[in-house]
Length: 306
Ligand code: ATP
Image (tube, rainbow, N blue to C red; front, side, top):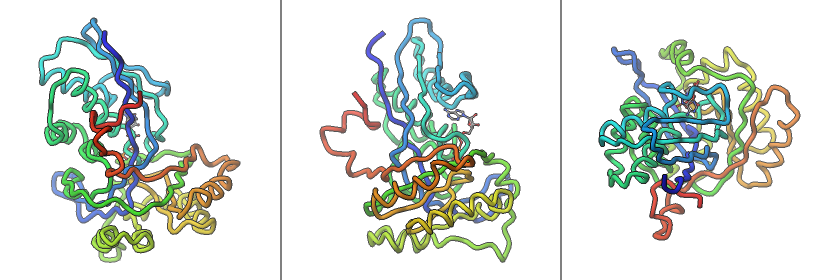
């Protein structure tokens, strides 16, 4: 039924992650600098006549039912717009799972954008972000993409200018991390070292890469480094191998380093190839929104591949 739609669902890293407090409803109030990176899952969507949502995925352990965020995103749009047709969605995962890179959230963001295109619904980006926010706090950012300050529980977005040219080395250890576990074990007190988020925003506005990397910090590392010293080890290795700085992304376990050149990032990546404690390695650029908003590419909010 019709042509399949091919979408790229990009991962994010947190250049800075601060937790201000735990709210009475259990959510944590955060201030984060989010950056989209060019590591992506492929999502292929197609209408079907059986009237059902059918998912497929290259990773056998991911759920293919309503537990998958892609299913929920498709379902919300079908219900809201009274769509009778079913949808087949194939998820080709490349983003590490349960790794602090918003893999599930970005797949859901792509699915919302894909439904809008597949059924020519003309939904505005703001409204898509509202549907996304109801499914997960990171989803509005994954719809918007680029560089942004995220506040509240992650849903209040302020777009920021693109960061200067650089390369990310992304290293996922063989262990995964549960976001719930990390937040449950986070204890904020007067000794908590908070990253300088405002300083980082200024450095971004000044296009000062050194100023940005100097202010990289993640308050959740105080939990994960205690339970998983390997995270601190990978960060140290990256710095010794020429990273301007290195940090755990989100609630982990992924660690990323920022390098001034592709060669430097690739050379550092070689160090991790034969390490049995490492599951995935990628060298990628930041996703720069202005490069993706030239008129000829504006037919879709998420870039179509073919
Ligand atoms: P975040 O950075 O937003 O905390 P994460 O990168 O730590 O997210 P995900 O990769 O999104 O974590 O996966 C978390 C859980 O979500 C997984 O254990 C998985 O079972 C579930 N999940 C549901 N849908 C997906 C999806 N499309 N891709 C990956 N995981 C999914």
